[in-house]
Image (cartoon, rainbow, N blue to C red; front, side):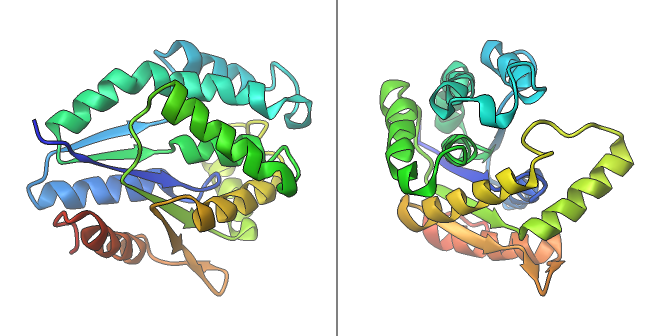
Length: 228
């Protein structure tokens, strides 16, 4: 079986990861490609994913109460549980699209550490997930960069529309700002990352414009017919 390509979407909460992952998947299917979709963490049907739910609900304390090394383990374990399905999907599909992957663990948990100590933690995450757990590596990572002020407005609109309470990450804007800084660090240093700027002058760019830009980049990067 031929090996497919994996693309992961990363970004802070409400940055549009699920939207852009689905836009890319549909564009690929429209070009006749076989596409598989994953999203992490898997909040139900996963032993470790259910532990992530309890963590995000604040059952184990606030963000500042957590060791990043310990709180990273349930997220890594959730992907470890899914590794056989990921490998099978890569063997049977042209493209595997993932909403959050290893970079999310590094950025979200590493935001609890000072930036000067982040490199050591990021290296530990890579060793844990790619080497110890043996996860397949992404062929490309798309970081959706959205200013914190814009994200705050998007989350407020989502709360009003859905009535869903924010989790311990979402309710701490200073923490989310640190997560964004960690993503910028990763995008500069980890291989295969692409920064998609999702706003202009404080306003979000149209979803289609962002998606088409990403598709053009990935067409060149992966050799798949993804561009519009």
